[in-house]
Length: 444
Ligand code: PHE
Image 1 (cartoon, rainbow, N blue to C red):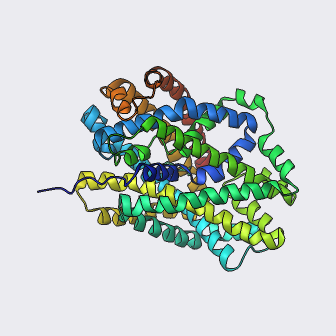
Image 2: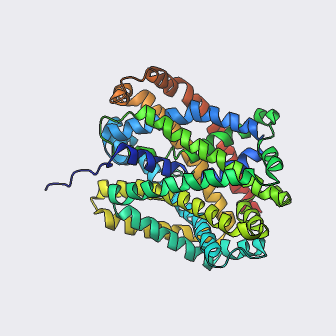
Image 3: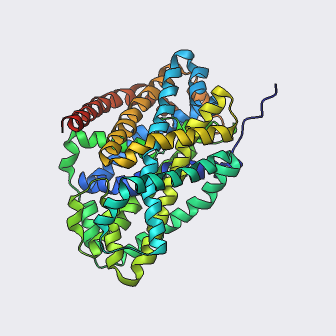
């Protein structure tokens, strides 16, 4: 039987945009600003940049090496270079994609609901009440389902016609909105106070190990690392791409959008003196304080709010696509299912597994901790061992198409000697945090 040839990206530009699309998402526009404001402001931003450079970039390149080198989906790619003993790690990746998408699509469903409401009726007078209504229960489940349906449709369309094409249209739109809104926010009266809240430098926070742990897992989440998403996307690359250069572009764009998101969010909130609500920085804070600001802002509030939620939605969608693609590509390769069938059935299963997250925010928070923190750190640690100590000649693989890059030996030394011990350290604290959260939820 002749198998269809493996799909490929139409252009490098398409690959880079799709990878940036995977990276830029709720993590940038929702998690990052709050983490930064809570954990030392400018000092956190500084620490975050260091973690992205020291750990994020090396792991991204490691995923690229495995993906493009094997041209296979995660489970088979690891087996290709490391033998069957490494298949369980691939299974963990696929499970990670499955679980992250199950609750990510719930939050994305809220976003879809907010964007729809902003367009159709505007922002009501009771944002906290509205959030309570739409964030859990049947409503949340319904919008979660709608969001998943769109994600499935795009992934079913394939690499070029589905994923690449949507990224080429959506990512420039997102960048334009975020830059535009950040500029608009800088003209507001509360801009100074907002920036001060976001970026007041408190270096004492950095001495806390939990901040180091948070910065590291935030870097993985934001860059889509540790669960095979970048590995999968790079498996559709041709040989001659300059992967180190592209990794720098992708990580740089991801950071810029996250940083700009903070510059946009906080002035908006402070312009209206709504900063009180920020003390309550739970999962829902962004969905309460921002609509509140849009509602109070007068005539400009509505278009600004629409743009904001459209950007958030676009970011969530292009990230969700990559999460589903990890699962779908693995099923296509292992069980030889056609793409459409794999996208539809896996999408339906993920939607079902997401229902408990739609019904309880506590449950959603728990899955977030488990999949987005614990799994990603375990995954990234294992990847560093794999590429540093198991895979034959990773430098050789990465240097194809990157002959001019001089720092590859340094990258390899990092992946071997620096990244694993650092991540072991981070892993220790992540396990403790996860354990506390589980026992906290069960006990209380
Ligand atoms: N990077 C995405 C975000 O910032 C989330 C994500 C994590 C996507 C892991 C794919 C894999 O929202």
